[in-house]
Image (tube, rainbow, N blue to C red; front, top):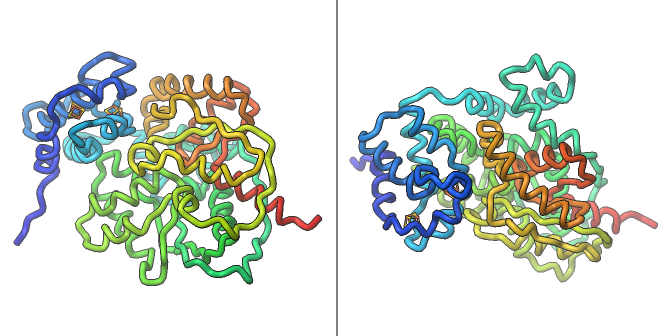
Length: 411
Ligand code: SF4
Ligand code: SF4
């Protein structure tokens, strides 16, 4: 019988490929901030090796250096030896979690995200004066609510797609957070896909992608959610699975790497992030899009750049909106600090990284800040509101759907 390799074995095999060249160090936000080798990718790989070999105790120092990692994977994208840092970090966190109690914010977030109805209630509660009673969930709920409060909903109306040639059937991955705080982006995705000739369905048995559980080293929790999702999407009926948030998409695309089930790789291969999906389509017969004379600053999440490797697809989608000027934020190669639960667990670093983004946003004079990841949107919208900026943080497909709907309105 074949025994699958353990986390320690996989970690050590991958870490052995690191040649200690240090080329990744200048690209690591935590190393840039501290200059500390233990806060660098190379240092963390060495710590993970020692952890896997049982050479270091799981104490506060070891835990902190691994916990401080944003998981942005800028180091992986830059590594000339193609060391899969994400694989090393994922297994290191599983080993950590086997030997210590998880931080409170992590446990609270996992509890919320694996129960969508509970999450929606927490977000509503976070918007009310009762929020202070919702501890230990209130910090999470309050931050999730930050975006919900800042976002006016724009009903799109029904999209008449009858008569258009049918292009295929798409299963929409909703994402637990997206459903709770950015349902407009989900509706917009359905609207745009229908306008382009796709039938869209929301498989009802789907659950959270498990990314937060995965980054917390909670293997059992991650696998429970992931296997539910494998069963929820019937690939015999669907031509593709489309996901709206780039963070969820990155996790779904790596199911094949983290699950032993043979169908996991096929599922991962069927998953597209919505801007990547739209950028790959022929738009020759697309409906008219109303112009939008405004400036949109484009924030490209780490998952979009370093995991999905499609840094330009947001710009490609926005280019379908006439008169819209697009300005890339100058430091798009650097994490905004949201980084899953990092904005809750390490607020000082998260806010320092966000400040640079907000400075660039102000300098751009943009009316919109466009991002494909819900976590980044929550974090950036909270910061923009704290500064009193008159900027709407929005998913690019929401902006596109609004302009499609405007053009479709009878005169
Ligand atoms: S992870 Fe890659 S870039 Fe960084 S030190 Fe190792 S081999 Fe060099
Ligand atoms: S994932 Fe990001 S924060 Fe973590 S070591 Fe790599 S570059 Fe640094």
